[in-house]
Image (cartoon, rainbow, N blue to C red):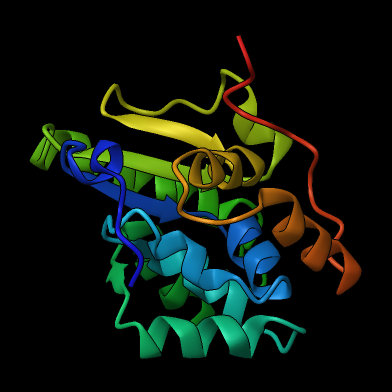
Length: 184
């Protein structure tokens, strides 16, 4: 394994919380393992995992297998519990839209209350999440997939962010051009 730069290794307690968009993009690129490059634990919110694996898609099985093979921790949420209860009852008004984002917000707020010394890095691609109306606790950060890849490249953990982006696009993923946080 290549050595990890001291800047990353010396970071405070950090966990990575990917939304569905980054998981799908990185699966298209064949690069899910870049989530693990900084050696920070990855935790996937149960509702996000459900969103990306519930239907057969070009990436659903890749993501499911990667989570299983890497023994990625799954964060349980009340949001997913309620969704599964309603699904089991075959409710006509079953809401599916934005549940992953709601569950991630729930997980981040739980992190802020239970472990305020740990930083949550929330990876996303959805433009709605970049808006200020998607609130995160002070110990969490919103980071777009592109910014994550550029961070990894800047730390010497991957050779090229552009190559991963190009690979995802070549294989059929049209993902967001958002870069958040923006350059200042």
